[in-house]
Image 1 (cartoon, helix red, strand yellow):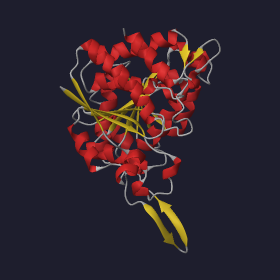
Image 2 (spheres, helix red, strand yellow):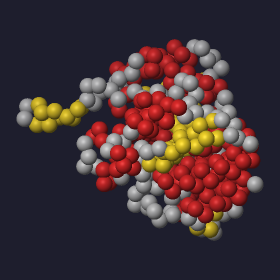
Image 3 (tube, one colour):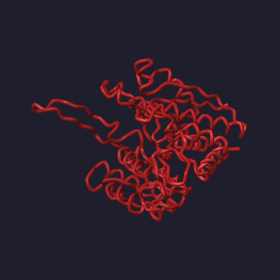
Image 4 (tube, one colour):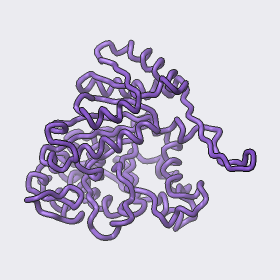
Length: 356
């Protein structure tokens, strides 16, 4: 039996997770999988219930799970809370607690959605790239950090920190991913300005000597952002730090037509992972059946592939997404002329039907 912890979270999180679980239940039935599914609290929902965004009960279940499916965290009603009690601290907490250092963010453009991208179809058609983002270091976790009074005014400060071992382990994830794809890896840094990036580049080059089959290139982050928009298909796998990866992966998401289409996996050294769509909690559409569940459903596919060893189940889900798009069904974020507008529940039902 394999244990899955489900953390619906805030905003549209419960809606999209519910549709993803319908798909998972059907795949488990088709593949004869034996799953035990638990549900826990995280983010604002956890704060509302027990006063903390990452409760001890959730921590215990997370450590015992083979994989975790998360919806989204956050909302404007929590912005006045102390920093340590905000919903996002729950997400940072679970990443740190489980050592989820490697974030895999694929950006794949389904051919049916080429017209939904803001770029010309010929620029994005056939797009298939993977961003490997380091997730537990860099400026989000570095110390010292804070806001303090200096010379009569408040000063905010954060520290970007990476050790050689942290860089080495994420570089290996990038090289291993490239070995399974087109064997091209672009390392993104800011080595012309930042000492932490100088070390990053040095370590990536050293690790690259162990992978002579992989063509290694380097790119400054500002140029990488431009190149993602100018000619995104030049990339196969990109590996980068936490803050650069956060920004670049969201930019890459829009190449595919909608941030509502892209899944992600956050892995630790044991192969356990947390799987979530890369979009946020979208409180402006929560409870209106407008949210696109496809990114969450594709996150389930990644979970089956990377943590549960169910490659055939993952392929079933990915094929079902293609079939539903072929049928012309679209949620509002990917709607185009000539297609049928549906809500999140109807999209989930269509995906379940497409699995058969």
